[in-house]
Length: 44
Image (cartoon, rainbow, N blue to C red; front, side, top):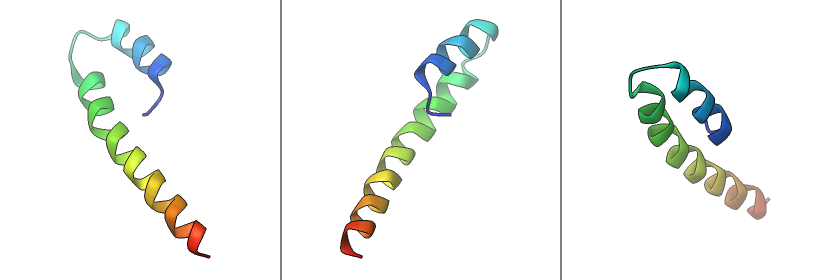
C-alpha cells in the first residue's frame, strides 16, 4: 500500500496503528525498488 489517500481512508476506519506501520514499512521499500529498476532499465 503506497497510496496516501488510501492510507487516510483506512486509518479512519481502524483503531490500530497497523495501516500506518504498513505504509511506513512499504513506502520506502517501494521507492528504493523503483529507483533500482529505473537504473537497471537505463543500462539496457
